[in-house]
Image 1: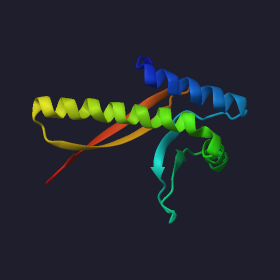
Image 2: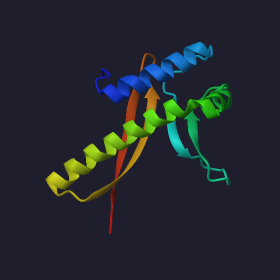
Image 3: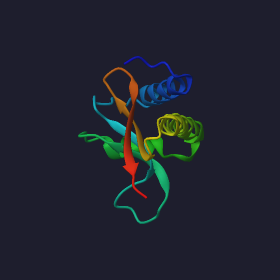
Length: 122
């Protein structure tokens, strides 16, 4: 799937440039999300890296340095953009309320959006 959204293009470029500059190779299928990591008690927002790779903690540590504000802003902007689009579709179709799970997944070449929707029951 080609990267066509301008925010997605910008995030893809930030991630690719940062990881290349750090000399980090990302295995295909690596998933990157931003939020409160499971199994932590501090409640701090951070990048969460999921991959069957020995460098996963190092990648997360590099992404979660204080100088990554622009990367965080771009990631959150894309997540909000996708949530807004999904809300508009749900409103137009009358299909109910949904919760979005958003991440980026590396396909071996680019970072693609990995969005899952869960219907919310009231």
